[in-house]
Structures are given as structure tokens and as C-alpha cells.
Amino acid sequence: MRVSIVNCVSTAARMMRFSDESLLRNAGHGDFDYVVVKWLASPEVEEYLSELPRLAMERHPACRVIVTEHVTDPTVGYVPNLRAMMNRGFCGGFSINDYAGLVNTDCYFGPGWLRALVDRAKPKRVINSFHVTAAVPPRPVAAIMTENLGRPEPETFDCRRFAQICAEYKRENTIIAPADDYRQAASMPYLFHRDLWERCGPWELTTENGAPDVRFFNRAAATGAEFAFTHASVVYHHEAVERRGRRPAGAERMSEE
Image (tube, rainbow, N blue to C red; front, side, top):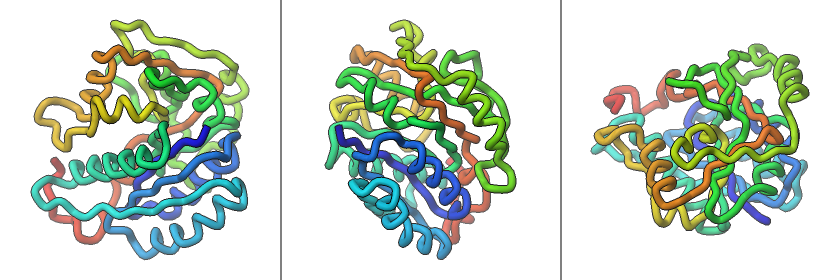
């Protein structure tokens, strides 16, 4: 089954290169389109994205890299523009494949991460990875383990510890969250069907009514979507590294929200 994987980038060329090396090397599934949304991209990002199609095809000859560009929406703030990038990525991903999932530039991917999600995907299911992160969720979540392994860059990421976590936790299971507590299986990355996007998307751009990603998944849960995760897909996500770093040229004076 061919799927779309969505990522967004502005300035994190070095981190994305490191992250993508693990994404491609460990996917375990080469039948996918890599949809990258750029916004106010730095010269370093532009250079890396020009190399990415070749790097992807060296690992997976069937993989296509599709780069699209978000145009600044001046009516909203910096973070809402980042959410608009994700919406653009999902719309692009679902225009070519029935399933799409979101990754970030500050992720590091364990062996077989994508194969595990694809194997467990269903039209009414949001399937999630077991998610190791430096962030602490507001309350315990079964699909999330908090441990700081460092920024996903060559000098700072603890590859040895990540390999230990994969060896300890990786197993071929599927854990379905209770219908009344779907967030026990809500982590990152995730893969879901176009129908959920068409019925429940896009993400709202502002936090006027709450966190837009949570509101989207609340709507999905309300339609009867099943949320599940698997330890067969172990992924590290440092959490919002690029968003909290130096803004891209042209966005320095935008309000945060």
C-alpha cells in the first residue's frame, strides 16, 4: 500500500538531514511519497531539498519526494502559519494516496517504523508509533515515554540509548485505546485515512477553541475512529525544536499566535 509521509521545514537543514537518514534507512516500507512543505526556507534548506530526491531514491527507488511551498498568511501569527503548512501537507498527501501521516524534522526513527504503521492501518483507525520524547505530557499516556535523548543532530542525539530503547520495547503488538480515552494511543508519528481528513479536517489555525491538533483528533474520535499504537514502530520526537529556535527570515516580527 502506497502512503504519503508529510514533513514541514524552514531552517532546520542539518537536523532534517540527520532525521531523514533514519526515516529512510529504517522505514522498512519503500512504497511512499515524501511530501515536504517549505516556508521561508533558508539557503541551507533549499540546498538539502535539492539533494533529497536522490537520497530517497538511493534507499527506496519507488519513493517520490514532492516539495511544495507555503505562502505566508499575514492575517495570523507565526505558529498558525506552521499549522497551515501541515494542512497543506496533508491536503497534498491525500491528493495522491489514501493514507497520510505526519513527521517532524526533530524525529529519529527506529527499525521498521513505517512498515509497522502501514501493516496496521485501517480506514477508521488512527495508528500511532510508540513515541519517546523529551516533553512531559500533561498526564500519563500509554503511547508516550518521556526521556531526553538530545536534539536529533549528530553531536547531540544519543543513538546508543535510542537503540537500547528499541531493543527493550519493540514488539509486534497493536494496542487499541478505550473509546472514552483515545488519547492513550495518540502519539507521533501517526497514519490515517483520507476519509477522516475530509470529515474532520483541516486543523484550525488558531488556539481560540483549544489546541488545533487535539480538536482535530477529538472530531475524529467523535465520528467513531479507533485510535491504536504499536511498539513495532518506535520513534523519538524531541518536540518543537525548529518552532522554538530562530525564526526564518521574514517571520521575525510576527506574533506567536
